[in-house]
Length: 405
Ligand SMILES: NC(=O)c1ccc[n+]([C@@H]2O[C@H](COP(=O)([O-])OP(=O)(O)OC[C@H]3O[C@@H](n4cnc5c(N)ncnc54)[C@H](O)[C@@H]3O)[C@@H](O)[C@H]2O)c1
Image (tube, rainbow, N blue to C red; front, side, top):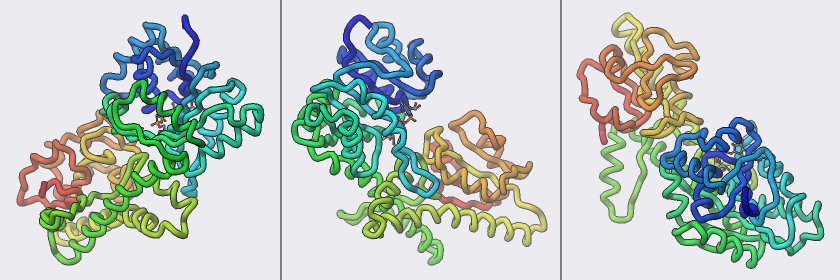
């Protein structure tokens, strides 16, 4: 690198790598750190290890132009960005050990006037904890560096656009830190930059996803009520939404992925007594796949009693939401796993048009599965399934509204 590094980004994943690319487009020199040697070597070849439209071209240009270099270790810079994973542990407690390790790795490099920003989704108080960690080790830096929290809101598949255009919430440990972080994001963000405190910014991210979880739980609860009362939940919600101030979401077979089904636990771990609605929403959304399993098993039993033979079942969709290939925390996968008890026989067809293969299950084409199965279970509302014409001889369990949309 021909010039001093401007920014060190710790974590070269779905968020850190596109952020690195955009910073280099603003002519900033970026040093990208990851603990995975394969990721580091891929980036240094100008290639990428994740799927994101427009990213490979940007990284290749940044590396070739000398603006981006990846490494296993941080170096001295003016700005440090923490973009490492924040999963939860088995007991649903947040695991901030990655944020802590990344912070520790740069403590020896910090100097007066540096800017330290956490972007990882984090429990409230994490920025303050990292501040204490830094000041404990480097007391001479108290009030001499700037620290802020700025969460991410991007949608995978459109990250390169959204990183630039989305509004951002930026909260420093003090006003000077907020102002300094805002001037950093002004270099590449065109969306609004909203200043607040670190704690409010941390809570803001958690609340955004918890709000979605609660709204989905309401829709999922309606689907149970409607099934019992013999009302079509899809028609009901469409009619209710004709009210000018009502906007109910549609139900599905549960909630999955790495954000909406995870972030509410970051609130529950600290505010368990207060967060009654958020807790109940998690319970409702976690229960929905179990309810789907029970309905599939009942249908299977009914078929056997009536026809004297095992039903051939087609499961439509594995992804955690429509039209993506991401299976992380997918309720559809949980449902299939429970119904099949881990064993796929010749009479079980699994369809997922967005992936080529699955490590545990043989995939079947949509056409073959709809032709051969007796029971069609729609788990994810992929566009490919929307063309399904209702075949009278088939039994259909539609948990995602494919037939109603
Ligand atoms: N992916 C999204 O759509 C999204 C959206 C909003 C918020 N977030 C949040 O952003 C954060 C990062 O998410 P992601 O999807 O980019 O994760 P990711 O798993 O894709 O990438 C994180 C990277 O950090 C690396 N890493 C771990 N410890 C490290 C350390 N000490 N130093 C350097 N690198 C280290 C990992 O090897 C990994 O490559 C998480 O907190 C996530 O919840 C993600």
